[in-house]
Image (cartoon, one colour):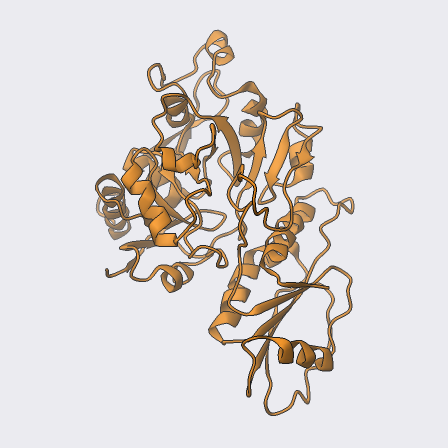
Length: 408
């Protein structure tokens, strides 16, 4: 199978505007495509493939690249699992372009195009606990857990046997246009080989899935760099199942969510049924051994790095070391010896930049065939910041702890 990377500049797709829906909790989108644009032609090609093929399509979101297929067709959804080589008991998030589309899944026989009256809002199939979250954070990097109706329009493979499913409306214009043009909700996990670092650029997707899929829509690098936050408002109290692009502090400031509990672990939860993607299996892992130093731990010395390298299974003569620095590490890399090459990546002190760059850094070091990667962790405890930076750190550290074999 030949894999094609199709460039799509979201600014050249046409006009995407928000249209107010009286008394509803979220504006709808009006999308008018420029049919003369090559970018639109590439988009239409991908949308047609989603409608007619069982081979998924890779596309960018604001978080990471997703691997999308028609969430209502079992054969199409199985194509995602096949391409990623993903365990079938790991549920998939469903991406929508509108509340109307979500409501058509929750109430397949009685969906309406608007929520025009107060009485209709009170009967909204989207649970009221989510209304304020939707107003504040959608479109955006937030996934909510919804009840899966019976019978459901969604393919059973989407939920991996659960009675619920994760839903989100992404912020990326290309993602929204693709879902809208396809005319179906898209089941879409990250577009990487299972367990590997998530892809934040089209070339990352191609590296992992070359020959397994036909089409990658290249919309440039992702702005957030870590996956969406997943929350469950059906539980009492509400819970956060995965940290991501929306912080716990931000969630707790929403009425009804003040008591939100952390329900994820920073290790793979083997032996349990995952309530959300990324909870059960080892994830985000490069080929090399990852050594994670928690925040404020001193940088390793050259002798300590060599000692760890000597114990690595893949190490040998001429072995290589990878180093990912973030906030504070400052060490001399002179006189490493002829047999050892150190590849040094500095992501800088800003948490947002670290989130955008951490997966790319792990992939870049994999390309250099390093045997061990030493990573400087960052503080993921609340230190009073009020801008989302703290929980971006929580998302980064959650991913790194799942990727690391050694913690210091």
